[in-house]
Picture (cartoon, rainbow, N blue to C red):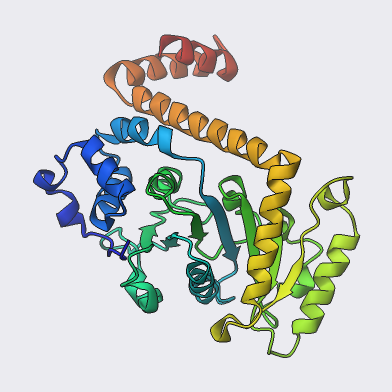
Length: 334
């Protein structure tokens, strides 16, 4: 599947290009046709009225891809590492999908960086599909449409899907809820090493990658991570996965084989321990909850919902009911 550039807002609005039969689009996507994959992801991003139909058509074909999330502070080399991993997985004969979540342009609302700018060497590979997605203000380093876009790539036959997040802070760790394996990237001299004992983002890692390991301070960063792991936490429980630490120089491909080996080892552990199934169920529950909450918000915004909300708010102000009782009443009315 060759890479397809994110479409402009004007192109997305052309309904004539969106009237294709969903079953036909899914069928062509499963055959590896990049244009069909791109159209399905555009339907997802645009919250198309056909989104429910798309989801129903995909559900029988998902659950096979290895989902790998890459996160870390800006400048640690996430894009370079992603490109190096794509090369390694392609050398192993695997079909690869990449969802690169970028900051949003304040003008178009689209992704600020383009996929061809990031990974030109893979743009013409028919077994690589790369999509830049705009975060559009969504916290956690992901785009709101990422879960459904992931389903599209999974159904399209990708053996591996790499999700590269926006550079995030310590508390924004949403990627861990979406990926089978979460890679946290660090680089020496960027402050991450000295925060190893307290940085929340480090606590979700299944694999630590210290990139730019040819720089001064790389050994200290690795040492800090090892010290953090020795303090206990979720990794110290009997039978729990203990995240390995791999040093890389992704720009030269150094250490990437060790990263792939660690990813394969973690996947085997996920299957053997039953953790993969547990994470998949947890992921589905979170997705269902998000859809249900969005539906409630939509109903609250219609005429009936606004009237009910206004009435209940007035009763709270006048001391007739408390906010919790008012919320219960609103849910019952909706």
